[in-house]
Length: 65
Image 1 (tube, rainbow, N blue to C red):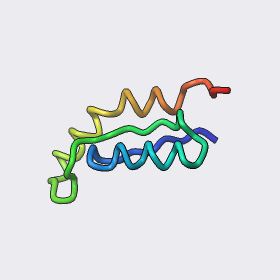
Image 2 (image 1 turned 30 degrees about the horizontal axis):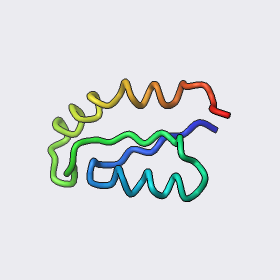
Image 3 (image 1 turned 90 degrees about the vertical axis):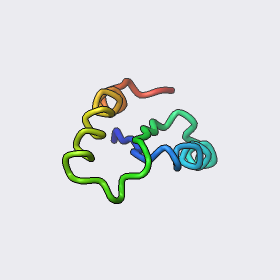
Image 4 (image 1 turned 30 degrees about the vertical axis):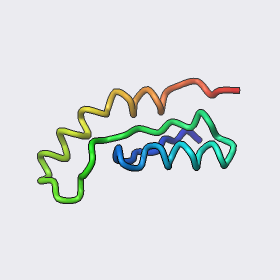
């Protein structure tokens, strides 16, 4: 199964820390600008479009050994 985590910038380093602690140091973690809670739908769409290339790359990468 191919997965990736999408978090806001505020949670990027804690997410990396957790991934390392669970033995997944190369787990793809993609950060979107913080905050997102009060964004209008069109602004959230713009932010997701900005990170889409990273999401696509993470989900289509070759598995690492």
